[in-house]
Image (cartoon, rainbow over all chains, first blue to last red; front, side, top):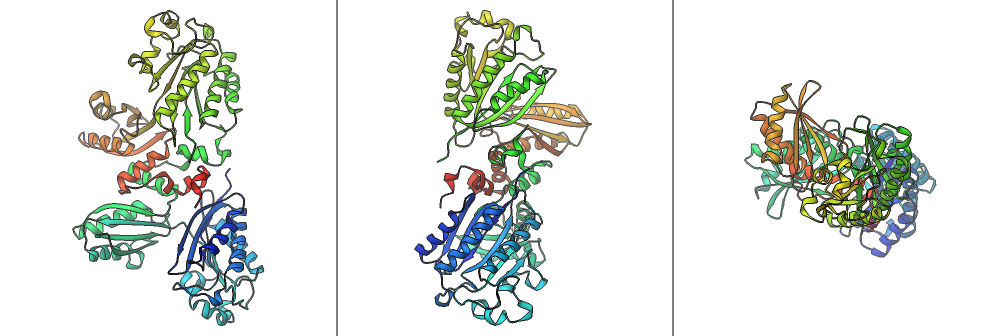
Length: 303
Length: 303
């Protein structure tokens, strides 16, 4: 038996002041049995995205430490940024990793929401953790932003799931959610015609009647047409299925895929899906991978 | 920086007596910082294959503990088995894993050979650790087996690399080597005609002028023709290249590959090669895999 693992991908409203960002990150790093996987700070949006992972208790502890550090370091009343936001710790999604189900992540989101509510943050649950349909989509939950959230808290439809209905103007409100792992995957075409990439993107994305859980846009990058995709649920659409749809749509326009790239990390499951799809390795699972045995939870190794 | 990792895949000459096998395995398991990845005992061949892995020092310590346990538990003078063998601990190959090179594995084979020689085993180095060309192939080193090794030790061409030139008849001699990771990969065809599998195997294997570092045989398994492959060096021939050769050879005979299977484990690198090959993910490396970051050596995780 292996303890379920989770990833947290919090967004906080500071992307310029490196001393503050460092102190906020250190608060999470000081939690035992937690791994920090990435930090991306965007000065233009004045916003940072921190990624950390571990078992349920350390991840919960890390989220609480992060919220306290954001509240201590940041003041939204005197802050500005281009990106829509409603709190110093703005969004806190939990992602189920190896051994964890979406139900586990929803339970973790509720536990985190309850703790952060007690700390004084009004908390809206979103995504798979949403308590009603109109709160599932993050853009819907965040509509009106910091400037609008004070009056929204008085709307019966937007009573927070946890925490007070009165806003502390320094710290604002917070969306806590559960969602599948998101893979950012780009395909480069053998053309510089951005219109081809845009047409391919329209054909493959869910909003255009294409593949489930695929968002796609066409760009020109380094003289090449790029189809930039977010795969928001690999169970619904794995990487190989998305790529073959891009290849097919591109072929219809006389183009081919020259190369691809991952932005950020992909879960091992994405590679297993790829090997199953192209190699026909139907029974392939993570425990057939040597390194999973070497590095994974040791209980799985008894003979 | 991550400490180089190694795998050892020793074969010892006991496959029936489960109490003895268990005591021998326990001797290795008692070594700290070592992971036992598998044990396969074959009563017909009266032989077991143990797989364990870790950093250099624990792997070396595990090999020495194993040799001592085999010498204490087994007596080759009173043992019989179908499989060619020449010692109680018969073959001890070291395989470089993540962070290790073949040169590292050769050095480890020399260190193990020296220690086992001091324990009284005549040791022949083979594979990449061989000290001369005629000792590279394991079948060549083992030719004549236990029954022939006593006189062979007196042949100047077969002076052992380490240890005495006089055989202890209870424990015999030992081949210690270094080799790449071996992947056992089978393809099932949509025919029950074993001759088709045999023809495909002849076409793709190295000995028939096919792919480098590929051994292949055709079998009938469960009413299906099976092409059974050993890929002995994934750098020379990765799984996707071997499979596409099988698909192409099968197509020439009117057959297709219905499914495939791994026997035992594959290294993560095999999945990375597969994703690079089919997805065009040219830059893909192990540190793009979330679980490598989570479970791998923690030094790679600092921001």
